View 1 (cartoon, rainbow, N blue to C red):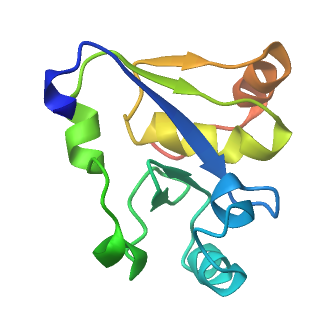
View 2: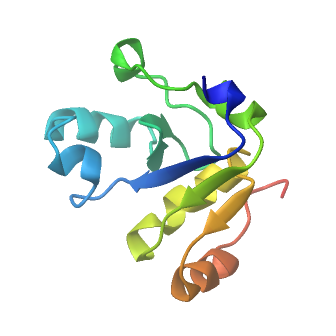
Length: 122
């Protein structure tokens, strides 16, 4: 059904103790720490991504029922909504991964994104 949508709105999760996926007990602190050790900087639709927007291959992927990142890339009008200092790295990774067509954020976060040095090749 996701492929039939004319617009998709998604959140972008951070890798802090305040992350919704952690606070809501979807993942344990150990799962979260393991993902951080694998290079995860955030999540999109509960898919954890590294700083370049690549999927962090972890066991959680085997348990996840969600639109895939490849499908997300193919959708039109994907709107990411996220703000705050703790989400800058995750937002940057989602942008690098090509998952968003539009970003809705606040001014402070946007300025921090502009200050963040681009990755090699950008």
